[in-house]
Image (cartoon, rainbow, N blue to C red; front, side, top):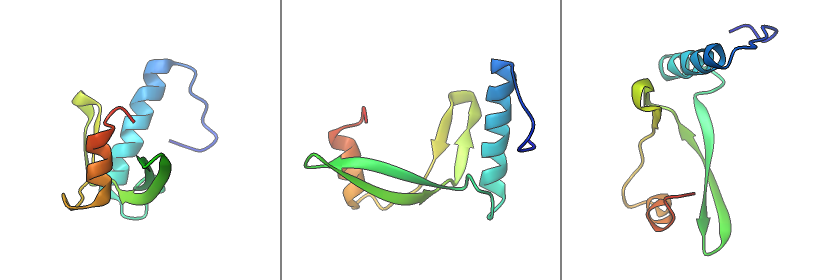
Amino acid sequence: MAATERIDDLQALEAAIWNELSRAVRERGHEWRVAVLATLDHGAADARCIVLRDLQAHERALVFYTDERSAKVRQIDARPEG
């Protein structure tokens, strides 16, 4: 998707976004490959960078990996709604 390209149709926009996410999974240097995930820890924001590893477009799911012993896993378990 070209940076100057304007998409006015919502379905086309959604398709373009999932296409970019798919590229980000395959291309190490893609701008969308690394994101920031923020959770709450005792009422304070706790943010860290995460790497997009896969996606499941039909389920509208992004896949990231982490160590199950990490603080972010406990934080997400405690407040899965965000």
